[in-house]
Image (cartoon, rainbow, N blue to C red; front, side, top):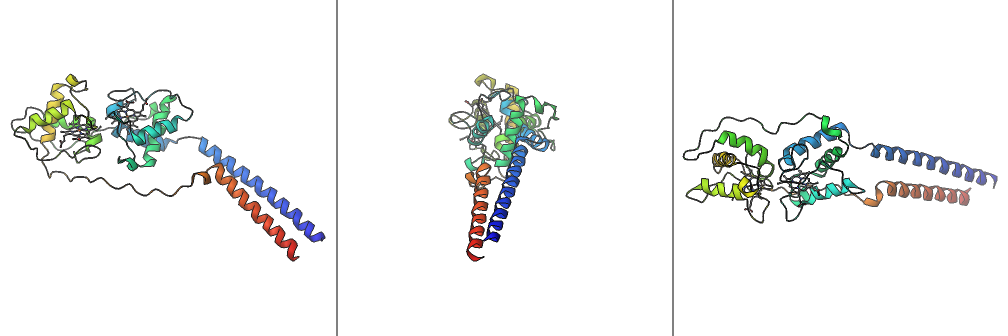
Length: 281
Ligand code: HEC
Ligand code: HEC
């Protein structure tokens, strides 16, 4: 009987020790999570922002066709607010849905980096990161017969304004594949009208200043020349890819829920061991 009591005391000691270790571990975990984004995540976020968002929201989130993002978000969990908008887009506006689950080009991890970067404006933190170039030079494009714009200047404008949706070479992304055979006698007028006026009821914005856009007549003409310099077949069309399967996550097993479940399991195991010992010793 004495030895059983001794065992039981040891069991309690073991249980208390385990509890202490668990509490310590979860506190460490909590403080690691609270440290926020690291430099690497911010740099990735900045890169993604320059490539995908600056065209509408301005290089420093100051707003352009899109809303001002360098602001203090009136929300208890601004990260969740901003992430949801980025993932799903804003219906009825030109703000696209960016998550692969919603047909966009970005993964959850990339959106995490964007959220971290955007929220860093609340404290002015990321301003110190070096700007990212958005245009990669490519071989000069010969002028297009009977089209007045300059395709090389158009290429730069395209990288800054259109590649975000149409891909760097117009291969298609959230926007249509542009290298195509235009079913029109005057494809230049056709393409110019689309760029100037946008496509009602789609994500394609109106770009001409006459229609509230940011571009001049000359800009639009140069873009037309660039678009027409890529006939069908010059780039490979990108088929929308199926979203990769994300690892199964069980929400209540993460964070404190997981700690509690783990602790309950350990307690049950210790209790079972004690009962077993009492029975057989
Ligand atoms: C084609 C233009 C366009 C692009 C590209 C774009 N946005 Fe937007 N975005 C908008 C517009 C327009 C709104 C405002 C929508 C509304 O509320 O009517 C908006 C709204 C938002 C909002 C909510 C702002 C608020 O105050 O509620 C966030 C956050 C946002 N965009 C993030 C992003 C991020 C991140 C990217 C890049 C991955 C991006 N956007 C790319 C046009 C764009
Ligand atoms: C926010 C995303 C977005 C941006 C930015 C964007 N487009 Fe588009 N664009 C689209 C979508 C979506 C369509 C397809 C519209 C439809 O017909 O439903 C499209 C269609 C077009 C078409 C017609 C394609 C066809 O086969 O009929 C042209 C030309 C075009 N865009 C040029 C441009 C140019 C030039 C720019 C930059 C100044 C640009 N787009 C910027 C989303 C975008």
